[in-house]
Length: 624
Figure 1: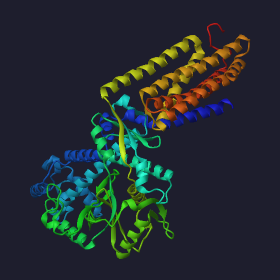
Figure 2 (figure 1 turned 45 degrees about the horizontal axis):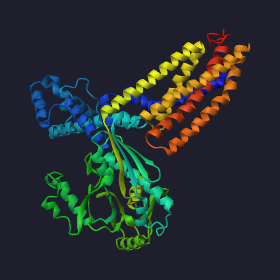
Figure 3 (figure 1 turned 135 degrees about the horizontal axis):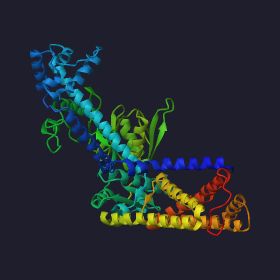
């Protein structure tokens, strides 16, 4: 392989590593502290903060609260001097020029260059112009709030994504709560009757653990806890890290909480009556009291044996929110449905769910299966209620409403939803048939002050260790030592890139693995340099000595590093916690150190030989 090819490969590797490391660079180097504080919070907290900031920003622009009084002020000024500027009337009303400009554009008229009071009022009719201007001012404020919120949402969610794709700090460096949870899969199998439900044990256990992990992640985010690390450990255990010292009680509540899923028949007539009442009286005191309970008049609309449940959809943040009733003056959805209190079918009869496609149209579908008992119940229910709506209820929230088109038994197909909605429905249905008891095996808290001390000491260890090695190599091996220094820097660069690429956690044990890697990486360079010196002692030329030195050192380096890599792989698979962190960083370091020692260092030697045309090798005080 010639120099140019090796140089291109090196550039490609470095560029790829930069892409992997970019989220970490953005997060740790260019994300302001206040953005970090918000980005690591739950989606609910991010939404609340974005909305609050947007309202505050708009309040700085729109200082008036009484739009009608502001319009009266403009009209009064118009009666005295038609050409007066808005700023002369009230400097806080300068934004109204934007409102009038939009009215001109929407009317197909050219926007006046001088947007004074006369120009503003001229675009509105004389009869209901005041009311129309007040409405436009309200609409402008709403649009402005929405635009500002979208900006904050993008800022925080982009930062959150960078954080998720960057190198994480372990609890020993960041502080927080460390929990190991045991899932009782044997009890879950026994309750579900795995054999009778035509699903094998290994498939059940795999699906059960996947869903438990998903439920825990969603539950923790719902509680507002910051950036949890939740991953499977072994066959039936879950390892969880939650930053923050005060998170333990909330975590326990999430772990020990249980969800419920069922199907309910929707009462169309009662739902229509309630929504008519809702549209007339509004959400506040007219329909619900201060505690969120139905007022007596609204409660009277709910028939006996029925209850009112909210209909929830995903918003722009990916959070479950009640569906909006009116948007931009149009009815777009139904936030509430009246359903039967008694479920038509419980979720524990479901044996599996998957995404499918309609035969003729190819539209996405959700296909789920029921066991024999569930099939009989569902067949009787759907047969008696053809062309009536049915609600899918999870944790007391209506997630989807679908129409019953025909009698259905064991195999159910749901159509009429987007692919994203089908994915959500599949997850909801999958969770229905999993009832896995969870038990907290161990729990450990690490204070932020101890973590800060550990972080400083770990950073100092890397810097001092690297500095000492660099000084030794430069002093002892002179010019060749510079090659080793460059290789060491690139070695750490590649290591951090790999940690970032795989979202691995940086802990004290990981730092120990890095420091050991620094020693092993320089050891490879020492072996190569000593081999080169031996060849120079024999009187060989620079090019011949370098080639022979790398060739003779190759297998010695590979043998030692391969055995170390095998040991690291076994440690990473069999070990837990600190041992696993040490093993992973060691394994990554072994690969990167071999690459930098044999590939990068060789390329630098050859460059000096063939491009700069050095005749001698600066590698020892005794070799000239």
